[in-house]
Length: 171
Image (cartoon, rainbow, N blue to C red; front, side, top):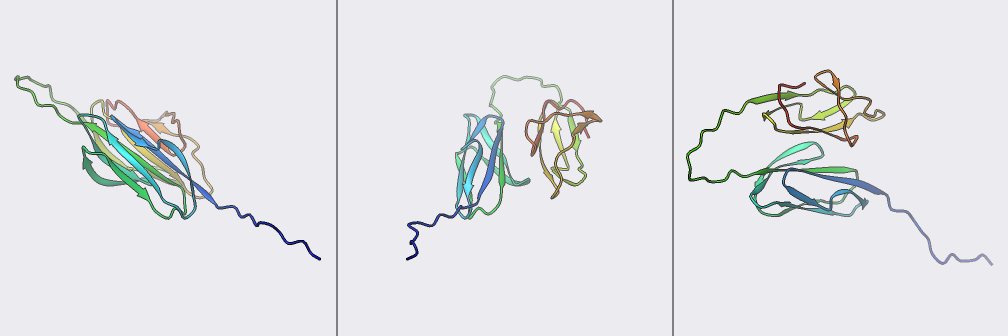
Protein backbone atom coordinates (compact mmCIF):
# COMPACT_ATOMS: atom_id res chain seq x y z
CA UNK A 1 0.00 0.00 0.00
CA UNK A 2 0.97 3.61 -0.57
CA UNK A 3 1.50 5.67 2.59
CA UNK A 4 -1.03 8.46 3.12
CA UNK A 5 0.50 11.86 3.89
CA UNK A 6 -0.42 13.23 7.32
CA UNK A 7 -0.32 16.88 6.29
CA UNK A 8 0.22 19.02 3.27
CA UNK A 9 2.17 22.26 3.77
CA UNK A 10 1.93 25.25 1.45
CA UNK A 11 3.74 28.53 1.81
CA UNK A 12 1.71 31.75 1.86
CA UNK A 13 3.48 34.61 0.05
CA UNK A 14 4.37 37.60 2.23
CA UNK A 15 4.97 41.25 1.45
CA UNK A 16 6.90 44.04 3.19
CA UNK A 17 4.86 47.03 4.33
CA UNK A 18 7.15 49.91 5.40
CA UNK A 19 6.09 52.74 7.69
CA UNK A 20 7.85 56.03 8.38
CA UNK A 21 7.03 59.09 10.46
CA UNK A 22 8.42 62.58 10.02
CA UNK A 23 8.01 65.21 12.70
CA UNK A 24 6.48 64.98 16.15
CA UNK A 25 4.34 61.86 16.06
CA UNK A 26 4.50 58.11 15.65
CA UNK A 27 3.35 55.30 13.38
CA UNK A 28 2.75 51.87 14.88
CA UNK A 29 3.94 49.37 13.95
CA UNK A 30 7.09 51.24 12.90
CA UNK A 31 9.59 50.15 10.26
CA UNK A 32 9.04 47.11 8.05
CA UNK A 33 6.16 44.74 8.80
CA UNK A 34 5.84 41.40 7.00
CA UNK A 35 2.24 40.80 5.92
CA UNK A 36 0.80 37.53 4.58
CA UNK A 37 -0.90 37.74 1.19
CA UNK A 38 -4.63 38.43 1.40
CA UNK A 39 -4.56 39.74 4.98
CA UNK A 40 -5.08 43.26 6.28
CA UNK A 41 -2.49 45.46 8.04
CA UNK A 42 -3.58 48.41 10.17
CA UNK A 43 -1.28 51.26 11.21
CA UNK A 44 -2.00 53.64 14.09
CA UNK A 45 -0.94 57.26 13.57
CA UNK A 46 -0.51 59.32 16.76
CA UNK A 47 0.44 63.02 16.77
CA UNK A 48 2.42 64.24 19.80
CA UNK A 49 0.82 66.97 21.96
CA UNK A 50 0.46 70.30 20.10
CA UNK A 51 1.05 68.62 16.72
CA UNK A 52 -1.16 67.39 13.89
CA UNK A 53 -1.00 64.69 11.25
CA UNK A 54 -0.64 67.07 8.30
CA UNK A 55 -0.19 64.63 5.42
CA UNK A 56 -0.31 60.91 4.79
CA UNK A 57 1.58 59.46 1.82
CA UNK A 58 0.43 56.02 0.68
CA UNK A 59 2.67 54.28 -1.86
CA UNK A 60 4.09 57.64 -2.91
CA UNK A 61 0.70 59.35 -3.31
CA UNK A 62 -0.08 62.19 -0.87
CA UNK A 63 -3.57 62.22 0.64
CA UNK A 64 -5.29 65.29 2.05
CA UNK A 65 -5.29 64.78 5.81
CA UNK A 66 -5.21 67.02 8.86
CA UNK A 67 -6.06 65.82 12.34
CA UNK A 68 -4.83 66.27 15.88
CA UNK A 69 -6.44 62.99 16.99
CA UNK A 70 -5.04 59.48 16.75
CA UNK A 71 -6.23 57.73 13.61
CA UNK A 72 -5.64 54.49 11.71
CA UNK A 73 -4.96 53.47 8.13
CA UNK A 74 -5.55 49.90 6.91
CA UNK A 75 -4.10 48.18 3.85
CA UNK A 76 -6.78 45.61 2.98
CA UNK A 77 -6.27 42.30 1.19
CA UNK A 78 -2.51 42.87 0.79
CA UNK A 79 -1.19 41.50 -2.52
CA UNK A 80 1.94 43.67 -2.96
CA UNK A 81 4.54 45.62 -0.99
CA UNK A 82 3.39 49.01 0.31
CA UNK A 83 4.68 52.04 2.19
CA UNK A 84 3.03 54.59 4.44
CA UNK A 85 4.59 57.90 5.49
CA UNK A 86 3.00 60.13 8.14
CA UNK A 87 4.01 63.81 8.22
CA UNK A 88 3.42 65.54 11.55
CA UNK A 89 3.66 69.33 12.04
CA UNK A 90 3.74 71.47 15.16
CA UNK A 91 0.58 73.53 15.67
CA UNK A 92 0.95 77.28 16.13
CA UNK A 93 0.69 78.37 19.75
CA UNK A 94 -1.34 81.33 20.92
CA UNK A 95 0.55 84.19 22.51
CA UNK A 96 -0.61 87.28 24.36
CA UNK A 97 2.49 89.37 23.75
CA UNK A 98 3.18 91.27 20.57
CA UNK A 99 6.30 90.08 18.76
CA UNK A 100 7.85 90.89 15.45
CA UNK A 101 8.76 87.84 13.41
CA UNK A 102 11.07 88.30 10.46
CA UNK A 103 9.61 87.03 7.20
CA UNK A 104 10.37 83.39 6.42
CA UNK A 105 11.69 82.54 2.99
CA UNK A 106 9.96 79.82 0.99
CA UNK A 107 11.96 77.66 -1.40
CA UNK A 108 10.97 75.48 -4.32
CA UNK A 109 12.27 71.92 -4.28
CA UNK A 110 11.99 70.02 -7.57
CA UNK A 111 12.92 66.44 -8.42
CA UNK A 112 13.17 64.16 -11.44
CA UNK A 113 14.05 60.51 -12.01
CA UNK A 114 15.36 58.33 -14.82
CA UNK A 115 14.11 54.73 -15.05
CA UNK A 116 11.68 55.24 -12.18
CA UNK A 117 9.54 57.76 -10.38
CA UNK A 118 10.05 60.23 -7.55
CA UNK A 119 7.23 61.81 -5.59
CA UNK A 120 6.64 64.68 -5.17
CA UNK A 121 8.22 66.13 -8.33
CA UNK A 122 7.89 69.72 -7.07
CA UNK A 123 6.93 71.31 -3.77
CA UNK A 124 7.64 74.36 -1.66
CA UNK A 125 9.00 74.44 1.87
CA UNK A 126 9.82 77.21 4.31
CA UNK A 127 13.45 77.96 5.09
CA UNK A 128 14.72 75.19 7.35
CA UNK A 129 11.88 72.86 6.32
CA UNK A 130 12.16 69.26 5.14
CA UNK A 131 10.86 67.32 2.14
CA UNK A 132 10.43 63.54 2.02
CA UNK A 133 10.72 61.96 -1.41
CA UNK A 134 9.41 58.48 -2.27
CA UNK A 135 11.68 56.73 -4.81
CA UNK A 136 10.25 53.95 -6.99
CA UNK A 137 12.60 52.35 -9.55
CA UNK A 138 11.08 50.86 -12.72
CA UNK A 139 11.01 47.07 -12.93
CA UNK A 140 14.53 45.72 -13.38
CA UNK A 141 16.21 48.89 -12.05
CA UNK A 142 17.57 49.93 -8.65
CA UNK A 143 18.72 53.24 -7.19
CA UNK A 144 22.22 53.93 -8.55
CA UNK A 145 22.79 57.48 -7.31
CA UNK A 146 21.02 60.45 -5.83
CA UNK A 147 22.09 64.10 -6.10
CA UNK A 148 20.92 67.42 -4.67
CA UNK A 149 22.07 70.51 -6.59
CA UNK A 150 24.55 68.31 -8.45
CA UNK A 151 26.20 66.93 -5.30
CA UNK A 152 25.93 63.31 -4.08
CA UNK A 153 23.10 62.84 -1.58
CA UNK A 154 23.01 59.92 0.87
CA UNK A 155 19.80 58.12 1.79
CA UNK A 156 19.31 55.50 4.50
CA UNK A 157 16.66 53.52 2.61
CA UNK A 158 16.40 52.63 -1.08
CA UNK A 159 12.79 53.88 -1.23
CA UNK A 160 12.95 57.29 0.47
CA UNK A 161 15.13 60.40 0.58
CA UNK A 162 14.62 63.06 3.24
CA UNK A 163 15.96 66.48 2.34
CA UNK A 164 16.38 68.23 5.72
CA UNK A 165 16.83 71.89 6.68
CA UNK A 166 16.27 73.36 3.19
CA UNK A 167 18.09 76.72 2.90
CA UNK A 168 17.77 77.43 -0.84
CA UNK A 169 15.91 76.41 -4.00
CA UNK A 170 16.96 72.80 -4.63
CA UNK A 171 16.87 70.45 -7.63
